[in-house]
Length: 252
Image (tube, rainbow, N blue to C red):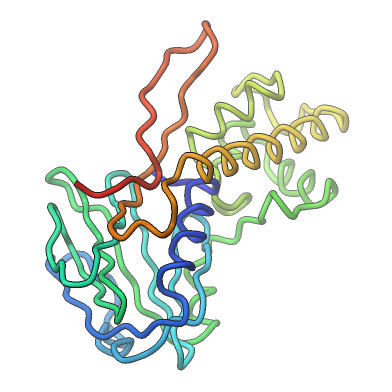
């Protein structure tokens, strides 16, 4: 599942592709993808995109008229950019046809976990937010207060979206390894120096992976690209290695 670094690169690439452009048509290809009723998905047709935002692990397209499309890719969801004239993609659940190309939402496998919400107004958008703070902008005091709000394992606290925004299993493992902390350590057992070390490790790990994903992504000018998730490799000898699929690759 995409986490903060992955979503940050999605936002950068989507901003270059769709901000300032008009969404002409939306085609929904699976009945369980759209999880909201009002406003209808047709409400965003004909409107321009004014921004792209992150909401936890979700991607938000902000449209004229204070409307928002919220995409949660879950585990197997992908966003594929199609050049003008190309209207199909494998495993597609939805197509967003812009005046400059088409954004396809795809999901591999038989299970359909990806979701789409359309909401009107900032208040409705905020209602979808679990409430976790942005660790990249958090002060040491704010981070410490969230961490010890409840006495859980450090691993559970880092991945709780009510406490911290955008951190999941993959990056939390890297963070804890860098901070030299057991995932089973209890949050209220940590002293101030350890909490500070954990925050430093969290910010450094997420910043480094965001930069790495951005470097690995093909040039934004490519006409046909695919957004995908980069799962972390466990790189030292104590942990098992995993393959690293690209966050953004040319569509086949």
